[in-house]
Length: 353
Ligand SMILES: Nc1ncnc2c1ncn2[C@@H]1O[C@H](COP(=O)(O)OP(=O)(O)OP(=O)(O)O)[C@@H](O)[C@H]1O
Ligand SMILES: [Mg+2]
Image 1 (cartoon, rainbow, N blue to C red):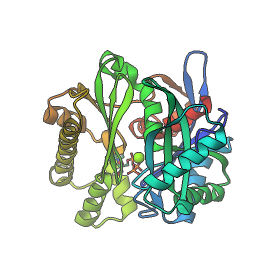
Image 2: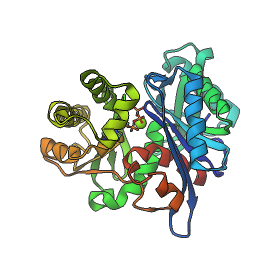
Image 3: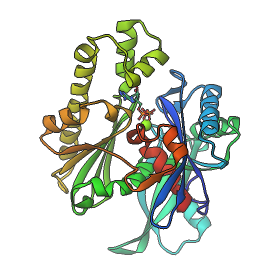
């Protein structure tokens, strides 16, 4: 299900709780160019807990985002996230052929994954030799419920897309992180940096050391909570509340009664995540910088509140500092959405290996 295909141009399709984002990148002589971009909201609850529950509604959103983007690519890369996705680095004997490797991995998947084997879709990728054990190699297993993969397949079919690579959100994030280097202290070299993706239903905390991911943790917190509060307080529909958050027009008390407290919650989430991280590790035990992304990173002032709460430099991720933007993508609003396009960017980068 992953990493098996040779690099070829693929459209990054981030199917997530609040919206579908599609992005096409092309290589230029020095870097990349965002050629096509499209975004379309996903109806409330059509995706729950990162699982597609309404194939038709999500398929329609993908189709619309795709049409808007103007891309002609049919091959796509998508990411699986959430609690049913398990990734695990394991060691298997060196010198096995592909079939023998698969047999070894299958035994481990059967042992480690908490679902019956016939309900599990899994794959693995060789990470390389193990330094202190010359007879072993390390492989990375990714496994999830088969249903999860099949629903994605059905969504893409509905949208007329096919030939896809399935990645995990964490891997896609890692790919896009590479493009943030100019924003990081010492370009991330020898530094420990926490990247916080504030989405709609989920917030993902990833710690990078020396530009490699060393830790991830998901928390069920996100912009949906604020949307729900806006709906209740002002009697708005899900769609209208979502639009008002981005474009303004809410009553005067909004900032004080809802937005301010939500921003403080964001800071508290980061504080707590830092404590969890410090408790989990003895290595790289000082975080030097916080980088925030995801839709909620666009909330004015949020990054400053976070920086102050954790007494650390914090900034908003911009995956496009090293990517030039086509006029078409700019017209689609790609710049304003930049912080929420980390995963779409990581997926679109799969075109190049
Ligand atoms: N300018 C803005 N101000 C406030 N909130 C915003 C703004 N832009 C986006 N959001 C909020 O960010 C959230 C969407 O973020 P994002 O697109 O990263 O989530 P997602 O990837 O769909 O969700 P998840 O990762 O949980 O599946 C929504 O709750 C949206 O209302
Ligand atoms: Mg997301």
